[in-house]
Image (cartoon, rainbow, N blue to C red):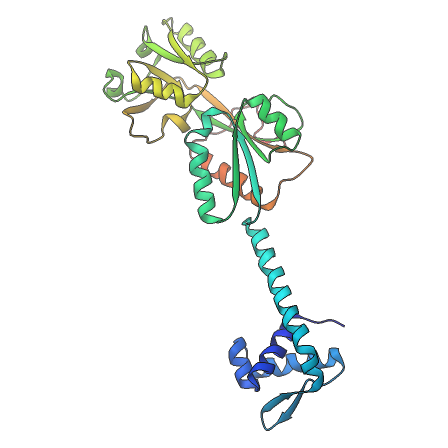
Length: 308
């Protein structure tokens, strides 16, 4: 026996309405469609469900016995459809994402808020830790998605690299704010906020300043780009940071300018290679990638953008 939800709906509507015309109106179907569905349902069951009398449909004893089960079946199938829709949209799923401090202050909170507006009910857990710990979490399936600095410190992960051009930030009343592009000579003997931990950005800047024979002075450092920006806002400092934090509109009196020659920051979006993430996490990973594209530049030659 092959029963369909439409069969049950037609039977229920006819049982309550008593006529094909009213049942068709209730279901937003044509009258022939209702008649065909009823005929198919009766054929599957092997017995008649209604007495027909000049357009009026009176339920048979068999129909009365079946009616309660049909109502329960419709309710159950409706719940299944609703649940499937929720799962497909990610409304019932939880997403776990981890990042270092750079992306946790402004970028990811906004992405999460926008995602939850599109997918109401989706629970997102945001963790903040070092890139190495986050890569370990992804590898052991403790979280769905990691957003970390490249290079990725753990092998065997799906990795999508985003290459971004760093910017120079300063207070809006700093003389450098009058320039269109900042160059090494503009940083000569100026206090620069460094990124703690022998960061790639600082290594690139040190090499550029050395080649230009300019003096580089670090008077403070921070693990996080967002904190470096706070230090710039609070004093007579400048810094070279990623464009996500550097270009953020925060009304803190900090402005940004391009720096030449280019200093590149590489960000990695990582997931577990052996265990694909769920539908909701896949959509969230896609949203992260799309949002990051506004900061991305073409990949550097000789480097792959995706290890998948």
